[in-house]
Length: 337
Length: 234
Image (cartoon, rainbow over all chains, first blue to last red; front, top):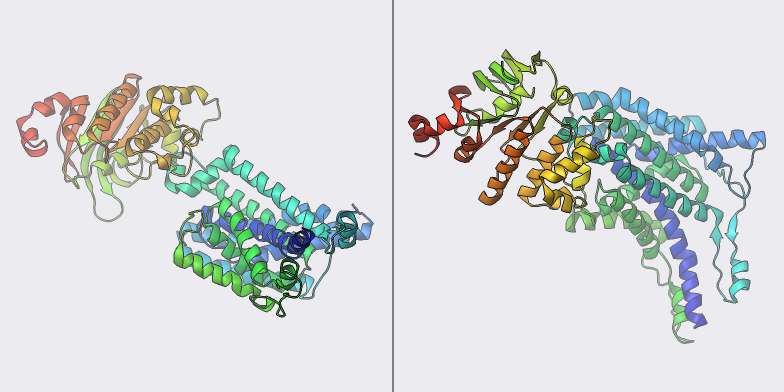
């Protein structure tokens, strides 16, 4: 019995908790991508850099607060700075929309042109971020490091294996739940949220119903900017902030959005967890888990690892290709790209 | 002067003219039906009164006001309701949300109007929490008409409301349309099922190649041997 519990604790410690954390970060990112896709009808490649920009502004505010000696220990100061980062990202999104995307909306450009334009914004924002904060790795986490330490867990349960839960993991998961609940409440219960869904469903009929397209687009950008900043900050707190990682995050985020079904918010969240858990599950070494489960002396010699962790990013590629081949509309039947 | 009238309309979607000096109109509480062969410009004529194409000549009067240069959205605010032929419901949203979105321009309490729509189409009340995309063709048309009624329009434009529904459902829809007209709403509609439509029409317009061929009461058109022979199949 304790063998099975020990095995489960290893899985929880190294696979489930990190997977849920990473999944929450991807889910929030994918939610933003899906939001822009369903309202503006293009894949926003600038989303990763938008995350980087929002996070950067949050970091600046965090440094300022730290300089003033403000602290909300045991929670990281960055949470206090987050609203400032969100506002900055919203400002950037709206300026970009006003001077870049609005022109193409007026021209009724095809979604491919929008996509290329978004790649342009990706480079511009990426450049701004690297110029402003530099390409180096930055750790801006402060506060208590662990909610539960492995040693405490062992003492508490008497098991061999420990389960550690980092503060950032707890914050990420709780924040994701709260944010997703707010987004769904907004989309399903408020008049403005419903008008956004109506616009996404049938643009012409929405116009006939007197829904103002400019307002819908504006709110979509603001929500996306907020989601991007929250996702980026949580990722940065959990790992570290490095401008280049956000470009790499774009792939798993798009994979998540497509796996769930583009344009379907529920699918984006589900997709986020699918991609994150499979990335970790496939690159995880199961040796120790199996050792606990099989009789003594039968423990495997190898690591029992399907793929080296270096190939982590390939997993989202594979998932993406499989979904596009088998069910292009995604698991939750969104729109086809 | 009619309540809503598109007078001497000439124009098209950009290229060649589709309408040639075409006049259609409708009175309060009456039903006007536009019939004609395929490609006669029936829908185009109706859309012209709703501002969905550029008129080179002619003008549109609504309730004594010249609305020729208003955009469709602005005409909705003035009191016109339009039900497109296809894509006329929000498929991913529930019946109730569809109705709510129909009333988006209103700031007052919409529950009264919604109750009226549910009285008119009882099946919608039953299915209020179901996505409109999951309903049958006839029920969808009811949602579409209900959505347009939510703004409390003074005139309702229907583009082939019975397209693709079974004959029984068609009769039922026509009954409902008559009921709506009795409440004092002017109804202008385009119909493929010319006979049934002319039966309930106060005024009928037979269009051919974007021009008026016959204009008379529904009854007179039904009795007109020429119309019967050419357009109603004998």
